[in-house]
Length: 66
Image 1 (cartoon, helix red, strand yellow):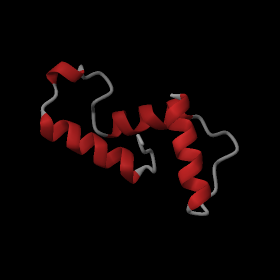
Image 2 (cartoon, rainbow, N blue to C red):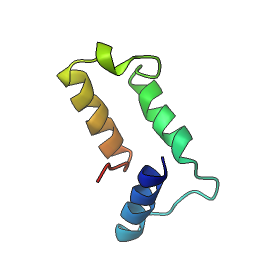
Image 3 (tube, helix red, strand yellow):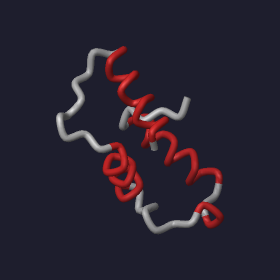
């Protein structure tokens, strides 16, 4: 989670985006998963298309993994 938070903050700073004062990366990640109805889904039950949808949703939420 710390890596995701650091990447999020770096992305926001690089793109002049404001970070909410009460920002919580865990809540943001869970929100993306809930939006996709993946919050209770095990990774082993997901296929390649599911992972691509999830990656795209994280990208749209400005959460990047590298």
